[in-house]
Image (cartoon, rainbow, N blue to C red; front, side, top):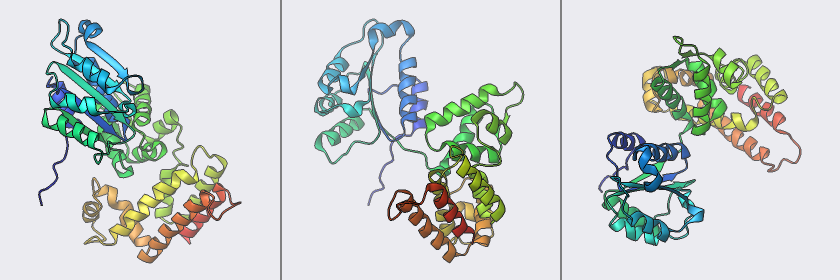
Length: 347
């Protein structure tokens, strides 16, 4: 069976755009709006000179137009410019895609059409959707799926972004930001930029103290520190943090710690099947982590939790999640459920 060909990546698309190799159609879709916005904004700001945009750049919204109107606009020729640009925001609101599928069979070479389909991907089982995607791919266009970053990818994303801004960051500070903000990349970038603006020239290293000051995450009472206390079975510190969360819900809540802990113990269960349970680099490769450093917490967890206990913890987290949503739990609040979970994990 032939291997399925992977689609273009964000980096490959941006390389082509920066080299001014514009495709006739870009269909950008997926759950992560950050990459869709980056590509669309780059085209809007760079495909045309500023003087050319008045007559040759059109931005419309899917709810306010039709596929037929967009196809008609795309067939026009530019005025005193090499190309015209049409950007369709919120293209997921377009009702019918047949006219665009027909246009994609023979796109106008002097038009750059960018369709921004956020909050999901096209269902290719539908004939019109399949025809549109197929025509774009066959006729020099680009189909890109913007996927959400997983929790394990966030630290690498943060470090890469800061490196591009000539800044570095402590491991703990990275984890604090990733676990406090989560996978909303637009918000994440906004917070990172806020930190960068606050930094002095010549000192571009971000520390936990800077994160605490600029983002408002306590360097001592945060989900990263709770995770660390649990992994090391530090009962006193874990209870101290949970008590702080109970009194300061914005700092941490049941639904901020559940995904974080579930991800850790799920990976810990996988780590039990690694070829070596003592070599950090082998554990890192087995879990597809960036480095041996990132596997240290799992090496510690393998010492402190048995496989049976790990399975029981995962089951308990599912139970607590259900109770937090009111299933078979009419009275117990989130703070008490959080304490119940931590007690179960550590005892």
